[in-house]
Length: 211
Image (cartoon, rainbow, N blue to C red; front, side):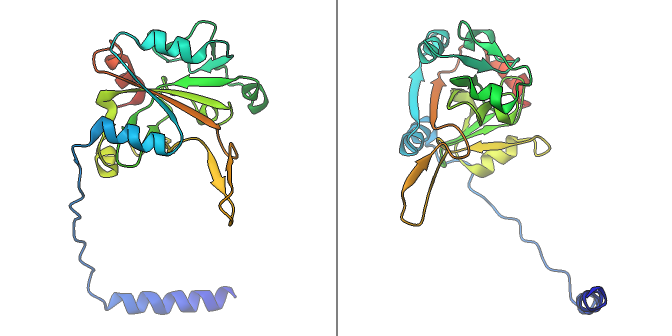
């Protein structure tokens, strides 16, 4: 088996040696659509996420309202203004321990309007991947200035060496008959708070997300 493979690969290499180098044509991907926040909200709602627009300075009250009566876990680097009362910082809890929490509150690195996608890169305000996969509710705070129009625009700003997680709505899947099942590989509920610019957390959030 190994000899046959080596012979086939050898023939392929020999054939390629006589071939001219393929020309790589740069792609001029669209970066901007002008849709921004409104399209992001539309896409998130279409994915069955819950979305709230929050005025600058009202973030703390909005987070507190979302978390009232719930046992919440948060990453250690979450900005103080986003921390609900009684929240517990993640201490590398096991999956079983995380499952005992009702939900998690995090920030994000970017949000992509065209696809309704939140991008997390394991920064201090976002935490490790398990934090947003195991609890049944993910509450994500998105600042308006973190919203980009398209996927290419997002990758212009992302650090590809970071562990990137792309979240498009609550966890859901369906079988061949299109019966929707939620919560199979992540939280069943996604609540997104979109905060107007000027809430006083920009510098700490940018540092946390690496952008």
